[in-house]
Image (tube, rainbow, N blue to C red; front, top):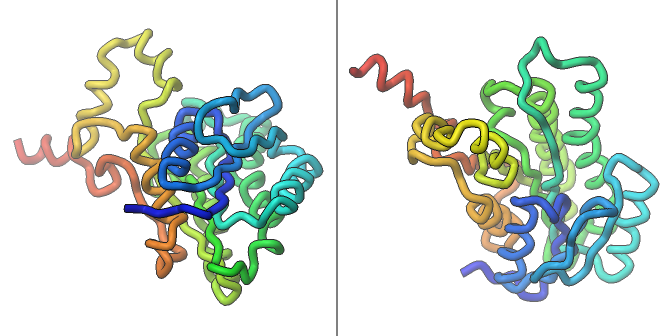
Length: 252
């Protein structure tokens, strides 16, 4: 059993499908969760001990929020979950789209960790960062700007793990595959059979659920992972293990 009693954990993108699952999972394990999202986000749900509303792309607002959070007690862990993308291929990536995806999915998470690092160094029982990357960072599944940003996030995580380990800080990343959140609703409306089609690409025969990603994050943020740093944990129903459709074609 993961025990996060007495732990203060910050979660960004807390109002989304994965973020909400993280808040509820972490609080279920005893953590006091600081839920962070945009100004108009609904953060009035079970498990939220403190709500902070700010735009991660606004450096001043983000740094002020980090300072407010630390004034009430330094976090034991920060889970950088916020992100966004759209379905596109290389020919669709405009200069503006490239800049926006890099800022939102890489720069904002990097700057957030920089804001918390000084306070989290030499924390009494150590401290942890968990970055939500993507399987797009490991292989190409489309969304090239998003994939580049999420790959950069893994590199940033490893920099923290390597340079800050002496200060008691761990850093790890999760790479989810397709997650069954509300973001899929419009695709299902357009093609009711899409979940079955996508599921056949995964060795487990399905996409992962938000609470499965949340449990992985909770483990990496917890004392149970005290010796784990600098690693990437796929939560992807097996898609990064191999190409099942290819195997089925050649095996007959």
